[in-house]
Image 1: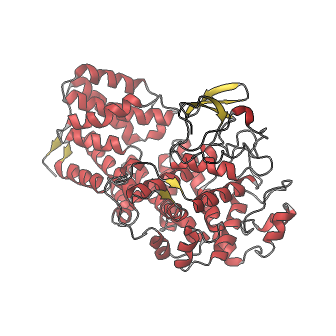
Image 2 (image 1 turned 60 degrees about the vertical axis):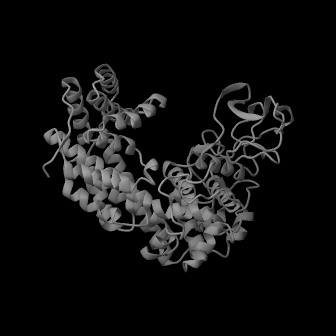
Image 3 (image 1 turned 180 degrees about the horizontal axis):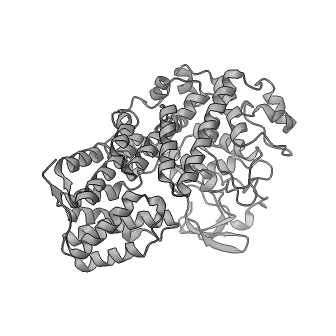
Length: 525
């Protein structure tokens, strides 16, 4: 790209009609029609992936033209000169319709975004320059092993085996890797397939791609690294493709009749009702069938699990913690392969004072050597909850409890960046260890650069970080700054979903800041 390239050009990422370039580099200034606004160029893997999926899902009626040849849309922002906006082709309306979001990172739901982030993180831990289809498959197996086991008709041992690629991870992300990894060609193809699965099905406006859509796209691309890994694990690819289609039929709806729709690459991901769809798609799915009794039973079982998860979410929305904890614990008993029910049940048990049951839920995850992300999540839940539980009960934390919490967070440090709240957990531990300066160094930059929380839950989480930082400042004798942070935390709306234990922590920590009585560790066990 010419170093002095300046002005409006067609957005090479396909997210907007035009993007402003300065000194040959894309800026965050974009416009759609006559409306100008800000949207930073994609930099994370999930954002890159969403842009790729948005381009791959265009077909007839898709959004945007492809990026000019030579433009690097993988986050490096380098390559050939962009095309001026005046030379861009007319852009038809988005396939997704209003609010569909296929052209931006909101193509993914939160769990799918987590999977893409985890795949990028693993690539950086292993000093790899690309995020591959196999890397995303490993991330799906980490976050949603029940889904992988059902679709791939795999045992728990087989799914666990997918988590180990034989390359040791570094202790810290990005070791020896200067730039974010790019998306491999086979992953781009899989993301295009994921987008097709989403846009060619009957669905409510704004439906996002889930882990099920991601897995369906991964098994669709012939000879990809993900497919090779599944075949090496003894997985029947035809069964996986058939079950993936059946599951999407159950969760999202059948293939819709879309004029001149872009046919699926191999046609096996349409479900049993796809014969009503575009003939070009139906012809390719004729050999897939409607699934046998085993397939349908497996899909029905996963659909029942998804329904129970929705019930737990509704219980939380009504602030019924006991009901939510029981639902998650019931799911944990039924689906031992799945880590999320264990994590959720443990969190609710801690919040409602059932510490022994919470610890039992986390035991298997904490002892697992393979699933680093789950172990980091479990370590954070256990460390924060055990420390806060003692703190609000007695005003101090025993040294053994602090030591165990500190060691657990150290053991999980490679994946700690992916765990919400982990910075606050470490900061609280440091404060109670008599190292408040370390706690301030962790939290102050984070609070200074953070924007205003978008919702009530984010407001409550910010309040936890502010009150923890206030404790550290009070321990350092910074009374004015501690008071400022205390006032900021109290101005925030504390969402009931934060949990009873965390609400008590906010109250007790606030009193400690006001009285200048900063809690500390006690030698007794």
